Image 1 (cartoon, helix red, strand yellow):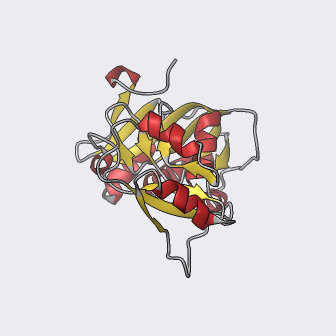
Image 2 (cartoon, rainbow, N blue to C red):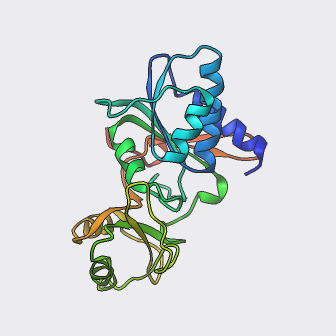
Length: 230
């Protein structure tokens, strides 16, 4: 995604934000483009508050003058990126390491808007790894329970210097033998595993996906076959 496409994507997502909104701020390249667009609008007089999904997004928002709040009852809209988007608007997220907070924010928002470039659109989820956030305590036992499902995994960052999330947890990057044919079923199975805090499957949560491209951003919503049930 070029800088110009990223800027256009951020501007398109900004159209989802109205004065007085509480806005969820995602993490990653596309979400960063939105935060920049939101910051510029705030500097020009837009009055909003925001809830960041990572320390990095919080730092950027503060730098741009976006007011932050903690634990509102609901958010009006959340804007975030994704690593993979299928035709039903289900997602894989978390390769940037913020999946747990991203899912909490998405679930709390009245509308969840995803911003991506065309390379993130897939026929089926599972082209790359599926991040799973786990407690560090007895994490090897958790890993064994995961591999018993027939998947392989690696500790992000390696066992000697593992990546630590903003929540103080580890991420196990899981891969199977092929693409994910039934993401809703897999999502439920992963949540049943003791030691798993959260996983990167976002199923039936997305309202709109805005896709960057050389011809400008294009939106896909529930009418195109996916999105959060009404």
